[in-house]
Image (cartoon, rainbow, N blue to C red; front, side, top):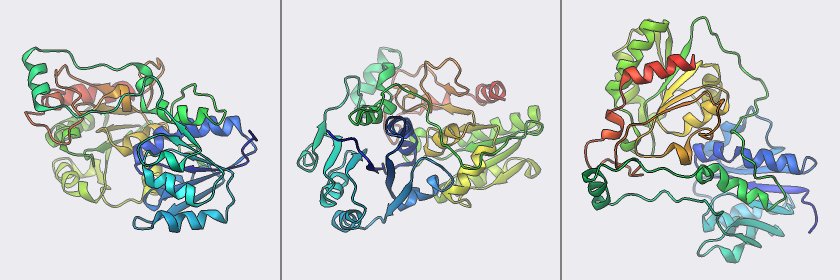
Length: 354
């Protein structure tokens, strides 16, 4: 089979997944340094790539744009290969309609007909199955330990496995956003980001009161300046936190930054205390240590870097709640997995990162 020269990468639609796909993209560039790499991404994620060097070109599509319209636009680029990262039939249909000769993606119902290379999931792939109420009750009654997953179950391997089918290495690496203009950090007066939101649902959100108390501890011990980040849906929570902290030590940026600006701001932070959410991955990818209370989700599957990396600057906080991880949007009981992670624990973890 001929060496690909003009590759389209159909990107994923969520911020965290886009970052977790970076190792596969870097390995693909490593395998084909002379090839032209073009990303097709939802317009909401375009700002992520504005100041980076990963792609020769970034193409976008709008929320309501049809696969046929997108495919028609792609034809003029004459791609010889498409690496389709999402699992949706729509993403495969776009590339099929674009007449791209080779189309690589995971096999699933309704989409294998649009692929030339329908790839089966790798051996250690683990779906995030939501727990049933009976399962939660059983685990709590029997006081079982939190469920653990093998290292190669991490989502990074899902994308590496796909890229391997284009000759790329599947050896893991931490996701890194390659910025055109890297940003420096001020160690004398540390900036610490707080990200109290999580788009997926409240089961991912460490209690607002805990963020407030942790913020007070960080100001008292480190004279830190706290930057509050979040989208439009997080403005109310961020405002509550900001109002409870000294104004001279707090800047509320929730709902006020573009995605490109968020990348810049997170790169300038010395550490970020955050829920398991998209900006968590961005912060880690620009070299900022993240401290993350994990509850309904598993660090073995979605943490910013692989857990067995001894030199990782990131810290993941967990309790021994038997029902964790449950992968539910809302906790059906008392959110014990996150409530039991204390502000003092989080502040101490930030201190270690600093």
